[in-house]
Length: 72
Image 1 (tube, rainbow, N blue to C red):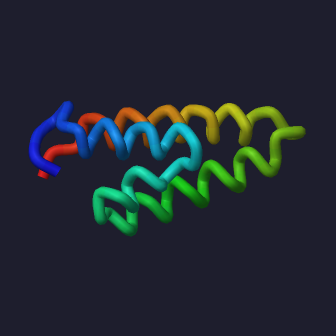
Image 2: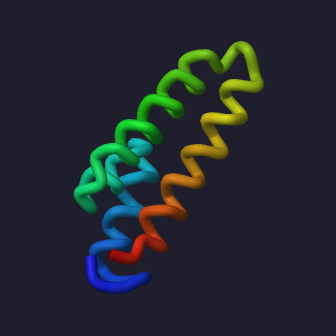
Image 3: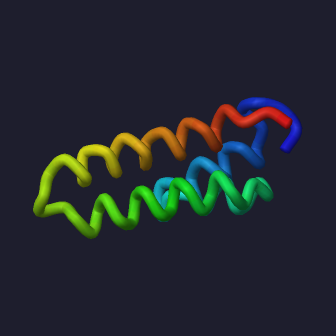
């Protein structure tokens, strides 16, 4: 990815809207992708406990912003 706001970063951010961590995977950042995916999936799976779902929502938003503002 070239610079912040480039087409690649926008595509990565859109990928994260559908599945957290997918945008980082598109950018080639495997560790960040795994961390975002695991935290969000586990948090959303425990939605009935409320707090994990809130944490997952924050991480999901963070993954979108992280992909959109990523610089090499």
